Image (cartoon, rainbow, N blue to C red; front, side, top):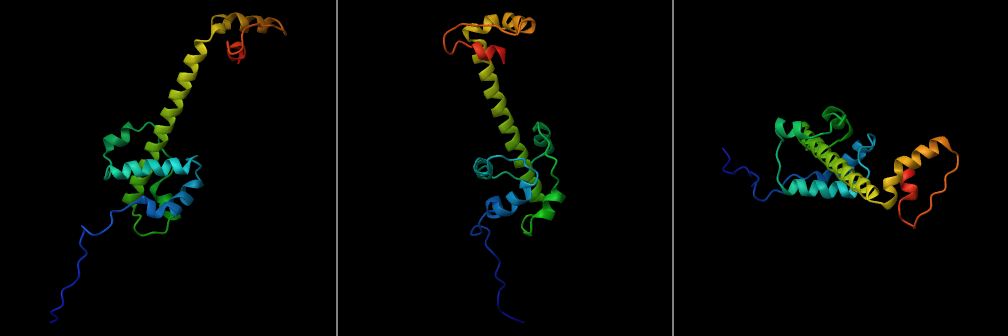
Length: 156
């Protein structure tokens, strides 16, 4: 019998799992779905999520996400080659993608809402309906006003 002890890896010295190690594979696999416009921004988001040391999300967390990604774990697994990217890890990655897309959608909605509020505050906003009514009856309408008062904005 051998007196050698088997070397067991010390979990304290192992690097924690990170999706960044598989960035090229994951990007390549997801690019065919055209879900993400800005990859740098996405990977910064992944950094933040990984910093929270999230584990597999609960069903409750999944139900709160407003978007559903049409990518399946199975289809993603076929496109990546690493054995470390298990189905469970790919499921977590897809949840991160969903969360990122939901965040971006909320961000766009908030910008649009802010823009619409600013448009309503323009001086010509009070005349919007009158302008649109006249344009429905007449081919030409001259609207005079200071630059930036909303002449074009109210018609569009």
